[in-house]
Length: 127
Image (cartoon, rainbow, N blue to C red; front, side, top):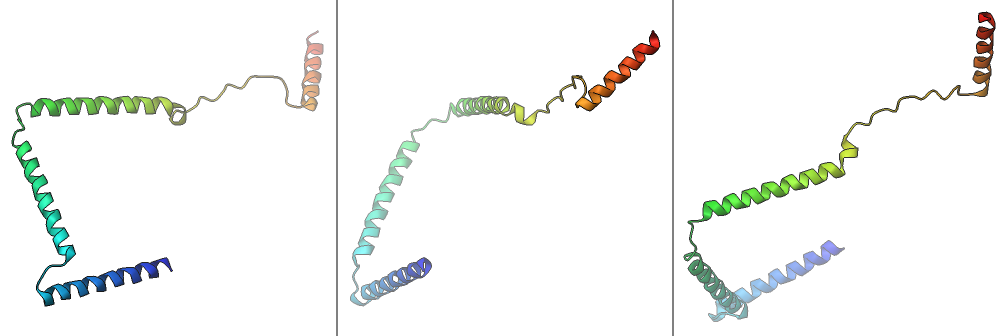
């Protein structure tokens, strides 16, 4: 539904622009939109001329130093960012060492009884 409404609005605006242009052609004079566009174009031309004037005063003698300074600063900031990222994410990327199994005795009471029984038998044979 939203697409249909946008389509109808754009179609109405397109028809409005065609009607305005045909009225301009029939009457031989410009209507408000054309005058606004001309004023805006004149303003853009003034801005471009000011930029061109100020750009003509720029000296390019220190361009190599400025570019070297930019490259150095960008490189150092990237290295600092990489070090910070590597430090924060080190536990994620590094492989953890498996813990050495500690012998805490038997797992169940039955196995504990069996191991105690075997130990008693071994001790009895040695005596």
